[in-house]
Structures are given as structure tokens and as C-alpha cells.
Length: 322
Image (cartoon, rainbow, N blue to C red; front, top):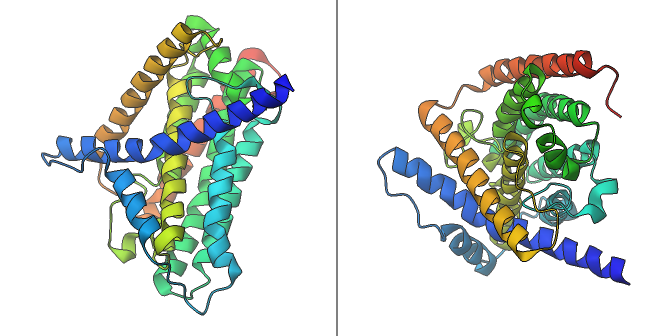
């Protein structure tokens, strides 16, 4: 009974933390970017206002769509919710460690992407189909880099459990900072920008249909389904930021239920999120959105970095990840 209670508590905590904070984190990135560009930017609670607006609006659906179109926002929401159980924040619930492998996370992200791309084809709109094809093209470049970079960290720590990665990385101290770690971290950072749909790969703030990728797939959605799609995308962004923060700064994770330890871990987690967010905002401000046909060049370069990182990690310790 105690184990069941612990599982339920951990599920509610991980779900609640990711979905509750994601609108705030998304708006904070917009606010910081606007400040760097000399603009005022939106208020920090704008994300919550937007969700309330979407959930109050009427849902309009084309008569050309099937049940898949309305089921996709729910499927996407559930997939991202499952990913939230596998990625550490300031705590790492050990009840999910046996199922929290790298392949599971990448599979769930790919499953959500597949349904989004398939649903975007349902209405038969040109811009939705364009966004769907672009999303799948970029996905074929993202997933190998993401897998190779994470497998490098798995090799360095001898674990494929994402929840155990930060603690395993921090236990190595200064010996962690090897060429393999540096290359894998750089590849993971680049591919994370693409996975989150950030500049220079995509622009989440654009309303110009010809350049849309992720936003283009949502053009036919309205009301509550649109709110679910945006909420899921913001939560995925929060989870990737959390993974990046805990890999780039693998320290001060809560290892006990002690209130003081949890408070310190929470403060450290907020600091790490702010640091990673500022890095992303600076990159987005300094670099313009690249042309679509140059995306494959940058992701191809990050793939080379990830391959080199995995080779160096194998040479460093020998053998393949367990």
C-alpha cells in the first residue's frame, strides 16, 4: 500500500510540476528575449491567460476530418505527460527509474510528433501539410542526434535511466568534463533548440505561414484542442529545458524527502533553468532564423559532434553502454 501511495504521489507531483510551470517558463523566455531587444514583452502570467482564453472558446472542426483530428491533442497531452515522469527536475522519483530509459523518452516524443503530423494532414490545408512534411523532415535529423548524445552520457555514467543521469554525472566531479562530455553537451544543446522549435530552426512567435513548422500544423485547430496542443508544446519545452539544465549543471538534486534538501534543490533547479533559458534567449537574439534548407546542415554537423562524442566515450572507458 505504501508503494502504491508513493507511485501516485510521484505521478501527481511530476505531472503537476511540469504542466503548471510550463506556461510561466514559456512566457519568461518571451519576456527575456523582448527585454534584450529593447521591447517590453508580455506579462509573466500571459501563458495562463492564453490557456483560459483557448479553453473558453468554441471548437470548430472541419467536416473533412476524422476522429483522429480531435483525438490527437489528447494523445499528445498524454505522451508529454508520460515523458514528464521520466525526466528529472529538482527531484528524481525512483519509482519510475526501471522504465525511464532513453529509448522510452525518444519513442514517446516521436509518437506525439507522428500523431501531430498525421492530424495536420486531415483538413487538407496546404499550410498544415507543409508544416507536417517539414516537421517530419526535421524529426529524421533530430532523433539520431538526440539518441547519440544521450547514449554518450549513458556510456559516461553506465546508466540509461534518465532519472539517474544527473546524480551519476555529479558523482564524477571534475573528471566529468572530458571531450566526450563537451561534444555531447554541445550536440544536445543544438538538437534541443530544434526539438523545442526555437530560433534558428523555427520561430514559435511567427505568424507567417510560409516559414511555419510546428505552428503550421496547428492552423486548423481552435478552442480547447488548440489549448491542449499549445499546453503540450510548452510542457515539452519545459521538460527539455529541465533535461538540459540537469545535464549541463548536474548538482544539487534532492536525494531525500527532507524539507531543507528539497528547498535547496528547488532553488538550484530554478537557477539552472534561468541559466539555460538565458543562454537560449541570447542565442536567439544573436542569430537569425535560418533558411529551411540550411537546417539539415546544422543538424548534420551536430550529428557529427554526437558521433565523435560517443566514439570518445567508448575509447575513454571501453565497451558499449549497458
